[in-house]
Image (cartoon, rainbow, N blue to C red; front, side):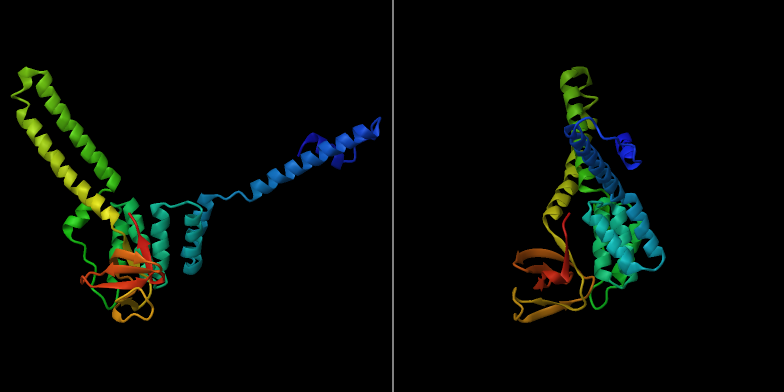
Length: 272
């Protein structure tokens, strides 16, 4: 609070020489008080992401899993979209028996932190809880492909391309090194081509949205209508690939290569 405002509250103001000066003083005092109270109000309502994250963790530790997921949802709504938030949110969902929501959270966390072993272990454990469907077993090549993020693959491929280009440029600029640099330049070119293969694969996968079923026995239908004939059902936690969308419906392909239309409300979409 300003000295002028403190003096007024302490009763130290005296009537001035003219009424105009008094009115001017009161206007200044009112503005200063409002500004001071406004700043205090802003400071009191300032949101601290670190404190909110700690509070969500405490709710989880106390066994208040529903409240914990709501706290993590608030963090995400406020832009705190980190791997730790998605990972902890997945843990809270798993404790509630919401396998699909847990898997969806873990998979988003994996996109951000692909080499986190604890997160991968929890994801595999959640997958083992899926009932009535095929168990999602990720092949070795896919695990290797997702060892890096798409951005990391792009940087790696770019570095190898620069190396290959540098070696070829050296052979052109320094004729004496042409023969000695022939083999390294060839190997670097081959390595660059090999690096582009996983980068291209990741890029293709990035264009295909994935989804996780979040309701028990979600019905997949032959068409995007509520009264369309049922094709098959999907268990909570089933992971599917999105092939088409129409209104509030999504056409999916499951692990058994079956296709059907599922209501959007029964899924969580995961986009790389």
